[in-house]
Image (cartoon, rainbow, N blue to C red; front, top):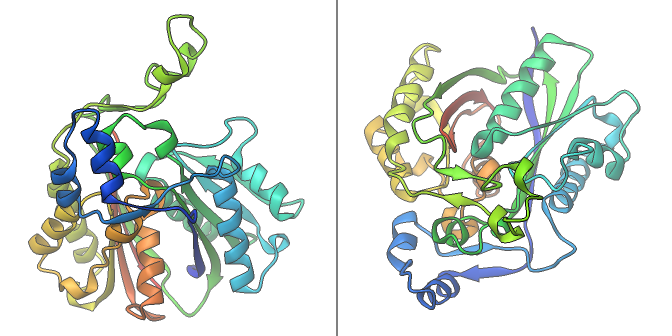
Length: 329
């Protein structure tokens, strides 16, 4: 089997930048104090859609166009397109097909959507890489992760004041000068399976007279999100040990940006050099599906990661599922 590497990565976010004061005042008027929450999560600013012409799909299209242009490719060079989101603009047809149409993809391009909640983009890159490693006819893939959760959670303090809107596009290609994707670990614990629900009452109930559109918004029951830290530490240790890579030999750690506290806890318990852990949640907010890859994008811009570096990704999805990847950039 050949290797698969990241050729290019680009991010798109709306132009509307919002700081903590907006959320603090908004929820204070509703009788809820969120200033402590935002400090604990490590928030400062984030980008939110304020233009009705923008949505999950339009952001994905813009990020994809930027990635193709940066890589010097056209959509006809793509053999596979995977779109991942927990807030897709369409269920039918798939958003991957919409992307294919907007970009001008080739007749033989494989297209499909994937939803693994906040773990979506890690799962999609893992799947795409393994698909390419097993099928030499797939030489290039576009993986796009996007979420527009703010429109679906205006009355949920944790969601609305924490999450942000963005898209991230990664181009993968077959390569012989890297190990590419090395390994992945999934751990699934469904003990909080109903704490995050969208639509709140399920799709089949959207048209019942007793429910309004507002009733379909995200329903969230708070829980201790540090529950995922033990699992993250365990899976990351296993990932490195079974592949014979020392933690000091890793060039960059790209973790879920949901909580600064969790990022620090995982890094501390693994004994990781903090300089190698990228945190961008204060600038972007929590971008859900794509947050570890937005962290990679920013780490590359800052010159913290170079070709040949080992990368460790970790994130967790609602429900919850812990996903970790080990790659060579």
